[in-house]
Image (tube, rainbow, N blue to C red; front, top):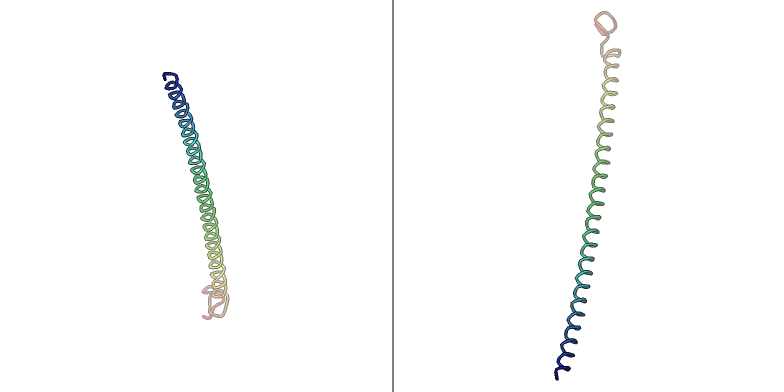
Length: 101
């Protein structure tokens, strides 16, 4: 009877160890999966942030280029107007040369 009890105890112990090992492996697998998911999410967030930064930089470059083009156009328009006013039909020149006086 003692031998049977001892054998049953050993079997229960072995079963408990196997279950503990199984639980440990499952916990490790879960932890690994969570770590991989976290790393993937972080990589995606980083990629999104980089894409946004790139888009922002491109938008800023476009805006700067447009501002420069607008300024150049205004300058050219003003120069043309100045040329017209100073040497054209409206009168310009100086008090002694040109003009309609």
